[in-house]
Length: 179
Image (tube, rainbow, N blue to C red; front, top):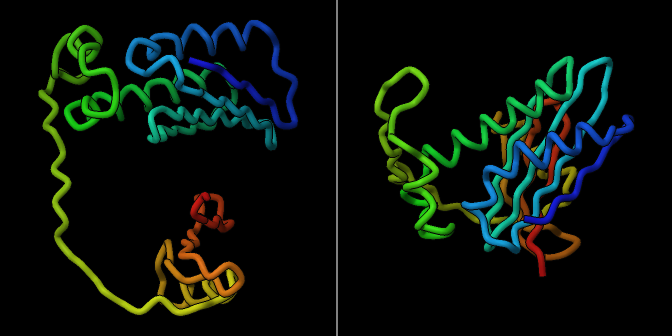
């Protein structure tokens, strides 16, 4: 796995980087050698946010945590990623190295000893609607007017299908297709 460690508004010490390699290293046997892990640490108002994004075989795995200490946030992120992989291991085995799951997960029990059930991805509702050309600002306004957290539209500037969404911190994001 290739690592890219970035600090925003904070200087990262070598011992933190070594901790990143050690913590994320336990996932190396699951992901391919071409996997890329980006770790971003941001300091805002004495709170440290650690975001980890792992890209492998066209899939993206992401987790984020905020804490007073960046080491605590890193521990939380690694736990979140491990939980995501554990929860979806049957479906992920088709994308990741299938032979590693048996050795990585000793049993199906979570921390409380409960057997984890595999989540079903059944679509229970389907909506069809026309996708009108809008500017990004108009799409955000429309999303807010209907009270949704995301909104799909045709970008009037690019003529591509885009999605705007509301982020946890109250700002907005835009999803655009890549060429």
